[in-house]
Image (spheres, rainbow, N blue to C red):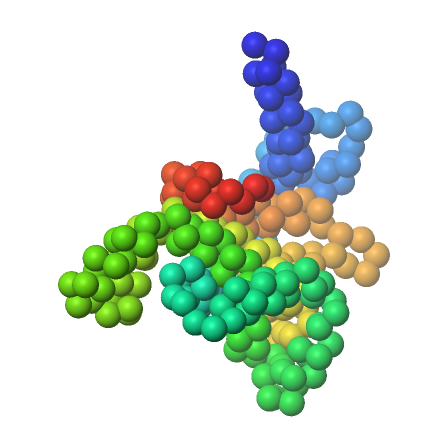
Length: 266
């Protein structure tokens, strides 16, 4: 009983920032930081949710974020699953050392290679294009590690039986490994999609044109030189959460199973 009480208290404590954001999105800007906090506004300002679409090109930013998230997530699933299958189920010289070297790149902070990456993209004339972000994020060492851990748990006898029946490695990958790996694929989908959707620094560095900017850069437009429209920021942030919530609810069952089977802790 005590455990449940502690968990409920922690859950409420963790939900407080979200509840404050919902409350602030329904207030006038001058009432957002008023003390004591009025959690339920007496006169909710629903027009905030209409204003955000007219104050800035919010629909364009929303579409750009959705486009980048879908493309990068699909590419990461494709590249990571291919590499993970090779590291988990195929035998070739130096496989384990190559895997360790590749996984070791996770420990290198992005700030270390941020400048060389930008110079490379500039020489390829890809700055201020979505293609630069897509190419830079199409590969993920974490994704390879996550899927490899799951692929290892699939018995080799299933693959050997398929090889004896004459199935090619591509056939084994597409017809056996991927269908059995739905939990791990769902987990990687959620991690990747949320990371790309919430990415601020990447679009800030590579995107200059307003028509190419993402929703995270759009939120910054509510911040003016001498102040900020916090009520509109909260309303826009709340709307921007909708795709992430829908994705999580849709894949929740596989996500929990994937976390348990790969041993990845949040």
